[in-house]
Image (cartoon, rainbow, N blue to C red; front, side, top):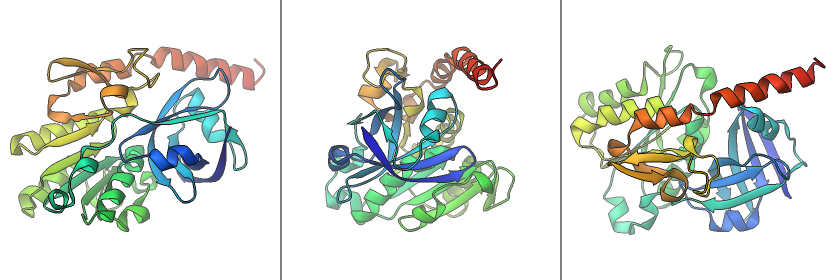
Length: 285
């Protein structure tokens, strides 16, 4: 059992939890994920690692209440425990293998959307610890849905974009990217984008004319997390890969996003049915 040692609500339907998982914390690297189960026999939920503390022996996860299983995770309180917390899994971010000299010569732009801001944080934090201060764009529909702003400002140069203009740049993250690159003349060696699938698609379309390497994380496609179920198949450069074992990070300019979005929608009917059954049981119908 893996005890919850801290919990806080970041915004509507988004919760952060610190989990006592010493072995996972010791081995974790930016870009990797864990498999979580609330109870024995329950659904396996892949969640990207949002932070880890080797000394404290904790791993931080951020969960949005989208379906039945994520609601069950978020309903747990401090002192309660998860049945399983397996990891770290997946390939870490490419930059963790670079030399100090190579890292310091590179300029990074991170683009985070919604709950995708959480897995961006350990990457920006890791770079800061290795002498690289990255630019970070955090986007959301409105300021009330922004998360990890204070944490990110401690490790990177933060720029905010909201669809309704309630904070920062008024518009989509793609517009703010163009402002930084075309108007302010900033040059980057790589863009890392994590967020909703549609956002990542249009970020890649924005950066492609500049031939700016763009890495995306397709963690939202994962189901089993081991490559056995095949649900996370994705076409990258015309080849079929598995998000959980070959990723979760890929060259965004080679990803077939339309196929990925179709695959992401495969289980909506089952999820809707599960939610309806849960609501009926709750209200005694």
